[in-house]
Structure formats: structure tokens, C-alpha cells
Image (tube, rainbow, N blue to C red; front, side, top):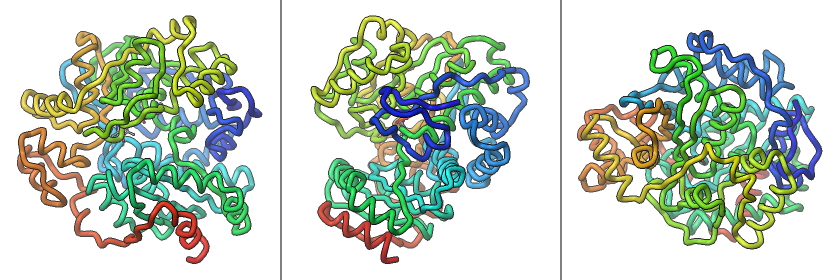
Length: 489
Ligand SMILES: *Cc1c(COP(=O)(O)O)cnc(C)c1O
């Protein structure tokens, strides 16, 4: 199976090449040329473990990897670093089933893919006979950087370089980054906000002289961004696994359709659910849940994508996004694989900040519904779900829970992606529960005693760990700083 670009201007490549490239050379995203044929026998799947199902999905999408290569990757990705041997678990509230995706090392769903990506990348490099060291360079507003660092830490032949803004990451996220012990991890604070950090990093990724210098040192940049198919495919697995579990628990019968609600930012997670439906998962409706940055809600209700609006910093920060990159892939399929139509939308987005769907493409998106939650609604939802059901949900999951309540059919069996542990955002949780927000380890203990829930083992000793990364730079010094990190150590 080959991967082709959504914009139609790049050669078809194998899975391992697509993983190495990240983005296609024409600026498009890689999509499978045809959906892989997998034989879906739900009765069998309902008795399989997470890693058994993962192996089949990986085999289908990464078909130039050998059986033993896939086994190795799965084994490295889904081992003892998870606090639950099942990898993901379900929590039931009537017809609603939360998929708890936060049992990995950094307590957010991004671990599911970012524990696998480093091994996919290093294996792909070997297959392509590339001996260069892979340098992952990323600016982070929180969750991506911590999850990428944890995934890449001490993976041979990789360096992981993370720049985080001094302003805007939570104290848990900062402490996760500055205490990272991986020998190949480089963590630097950058003065300013996330936008400043991201702009500075982008100047590096497009600096041809730097790219040449890296090559002279036998290194090359790669991306841990969610546009990489190596991040998308691992996320298909949990929708299959969850559906199979619903059968096993007799919540549904084989073939019953379900709804899927996903708190959405860059559109990666909900796109994975759509991919799952294309290879055999029976889905009635995809519910795209936004926060106050509700570009996608407007898009699915009007057919116009309009990114020209103020950016809001909210209490569900991992969803604070105005341009959802992975939506481009959905447009490709909704336009019946019309790359020139996708190209015209993306050109309009780049030049005018907006585009309007053709009627035909819009009709093909009928399965998608969307609504949003304000910050006050997020807080209220956390409190009411806890009071009524004694279940603690994080602010991102609360966005999904609120939207489910407001627009979804409650009689329909529904999966809701619970994307982070409440313990990743203790300040927001405490204030939602009517407490005064406090910082650091104290906030974790307070949340635990107030709600009678356990502090996840991943963060119990987080604030006792020594700080290993103290460097702070201005955006102007980013090039010098990167070279020191990579070449002088
Ligand atoms: C990244 C993230 C999201 C958004 O996921 P996308 O795939 O970007 O749509 C939602 N919740 C949490 C906790 C996240 O870290």
C-alpha cells in the first residue's frame, strides 16, 4: 500500500518513507492510496488484548514493516511504562463510555501514539538505510512536548529537542519537562508565549544552512507533530479495542452503530476515529467537541472554515488551536479524493484565512456534528459529573462531556475520548470543585483528598525530582542554542 499527498503534487511513497518524511514535499499530508483490507471479526476481537489488536492495525497500515519489526515496536510502546496493563480502560455512565486514554507516562492521550512513534521512526530509518541520527525538534504548549520527550527519551540514534514558552505551560507540564532524565533530551525555556516559541522553531526547520550542518554531523530533522501517519495509526487502535470491549461487556451487539465524541484541537484524534470507520468500525455519528476556539463548530455548521478570529487561552489549553492541520485529510476523503479541490481550500486558507466548502463535499460530511463548551461550562461540567456520578474528568474531557449532553442522542451507545488525567490540570480541577487553586505537589495532594481519588503513580514523586534543565533563552538566540545542544555535547 502506498501513501499519497492530499495535494496531489508529490510522489507516492511507502509507509516507512511517509513516516520519515512527516509532511509530503508539496506541503500536503500523506493518506493511504486505498483503505487496507482487514478482516474484522468482532467476536474474535472482543477476546483479544490491546496489543493484539494494535498488531493487526499496524500490520495493515504499515505494510512494508515485517512482522518482527511490528512486534518489536508494539512491545517497546505498550510495556511497563503504562500504569494499567490493559493500556486503555473504559468507564461507563449509562449509555456513555469514557475511553480512558491517559494511563501512559505523561497522563494524556498523546502517549498512545508518542510511545510508538520513536520506534516507528528508527525502524523506518533502518529500512530506508538511513544511518543519520533523527533530531526531533518541537515547540510545545504542553502536552505534545512532554509526551514526545517521554517517548523519545534514551531511544538510540535520536535526539529530542523541546522549546517551551516561559508563559502558558502548567506547573505539572513544566516540571515533567525540566526533570527529564533522558540523555538525548534537550529542554529549553524560551521567553514569551507559545506563538513566540513556535515561530522561533519554524525558522530553524526551514534554515537550509542549518540543515546542511546537521547533515555534516550525520543528523536530520524529523517531526513528532500529529500530521505524521506514525501518530495517526496508533490512535485507530483504541476505537477498535473499545468497540470490541462493548461487545464483550454486552453493551452492544456485533454490527450496532455507535456515536463517538472527541474533544478536538488539531483534528488528529477524531480523524483516527473516521479512519477506523473506513476499515470496518460501525459508526453512526462523529461529534467534534470544541472549546471557545470554536472554528470547527462553525465549520461543521456552516461549511465555512474561518481562522480569522481572536485566539483564546482557555482552561482546556491542548485544544487552543485555530488551524486544525489534520482536517485537510478529511477534506481529501470528503471531496471524493479530489486533490485539486483540497489544494484550492488550503491556498485560500493560507492567503485569506478562510475557505468555503463546495456543496458536494459538504454533503459528504453529514456524519459529523459539532458544538462547543465555554470555560464556565467546562468548570460546571467537572463539578456536576463529579457530584452526580463520583467520576473525575479533566477539563478537555469535560468539553466533550458538555457537548455530548447538549447535542448527542443519549439513547445511542457512545464512546467519549477521555484525553487527559484530571491530575494533569490540578489547578483547574480544584477551582471547578470550589477550592482555591494552589501550586505544585500540594495541589495534587489536595485534589486527591478532596475527591478521594489516587494520585497517579506517574506524578506522585514528580516534584521531588531534581531539575536538570534550567536554560532560558530569548527567541533570537534559538539557533545558537540549538547548535550548542547538538554539536558541542
Ligand atoms: C492534544 C490534545 C487534545 C486534542 O487532540 P487533537 O488530536 O489535536 O484533536 C485534546 N485533549 C488533550 C488532553 C490533548 O492533549
